Length: 499
Image 1 (cartoon, rainbow, N blue to C red):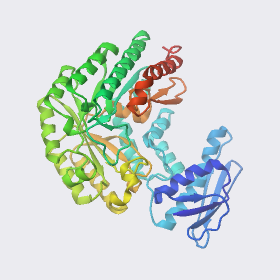
Image 2 (cartoon, helix red, strand yellow):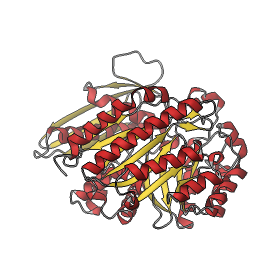
Image 3 (cartoon, one colour):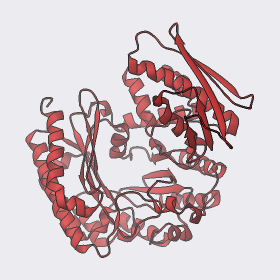
């Protein structure tokens, strides 16, 4: 879809206009300079602010499609809040024009951020009632009731799982990135390198990782800062050997403060082909019983097509093996919209999930991430259309409700099929605390290891500073001491004067 925008010269409009266009058609082309447009839409806009109100209007040239919105702009608003009201009013006009033109309805309205529930949390923390917050979401962002109700259900579930969610600023969580997998999946953009042939690099990487854990743990102990959760991700952390895992968890207990009272430790064992009795014995030794085993699909042809070198049968076998070894909190992931799959295949995956009954289930909607193999070769990977993707998501919502799974976190991504969302569901009391904390950005998360991203959150202002370790093992190995020191400096600036 090609769109020429007239009347909105302020560059602050440009990025959100592009983002909203992409909700309707991926990789839309939005132009702002005068141009001869042979095929496409020409949209003309105007807006004015007066008497404490902003009013915006727009139309599509050559059609009878028009739109007009207005909002209050109280004098008490600061410049940033005032501009937000102006921008949202114009974007509301724009969204309405595109909906009328395409016949598509965007239930998330003009909201393109990845963390919708964070917005609702903020409103409630500031003292708004649920009714007023819901009205504001509907008025300011044009979000439909269905999505607002989902947001509220998730917020309620999060506060039940972590009653002190709003008071975790003086603690931290830790993410530990292991950048190796058996193979690279076609849809993946995470730091993940096929472990075969990487033996020398793995050992060097783990040396640097142990160094980071020691230094970071020593700093946390020195300053009396508690750790709320620890999450071993990647890659696939269970790609390394049982001996290497043993040394890694031993380091965690030795280096991190008061590990026995950390609320949750999770290890991604997402690839079933990495799970073995000796590795499960190591997890037992360190009292780790929350893992992820991610089938993604229960269709062998799909698994082969996306580069996952395990079978459906192996997923089921390793799930039962994990149960035998005391894994009492297992998460499983499914992806809606994988190549060649429709509603029938997804229903089959849900039926298999019913037979296994994991404690939590994360339902992802396929996203064409820019750097993935799937995005680079789209013609090779045929996916379902928007209508069928929506039916699959509706099926997930109905199925989880019928089987006592409750939504407890969600996030959205660019280029996600059907402009839908990724939702984590769990049985009552089995929510992943780390997933809640990272999605709602309520505390600092220290990223350790390859490709690990840190989020430093100022306990007073809530300002977020991001810091990422390099994604490839060689770059990480060359400078891990520097990355560790720089992260400690961030922590010094945030916590020393507040502890």
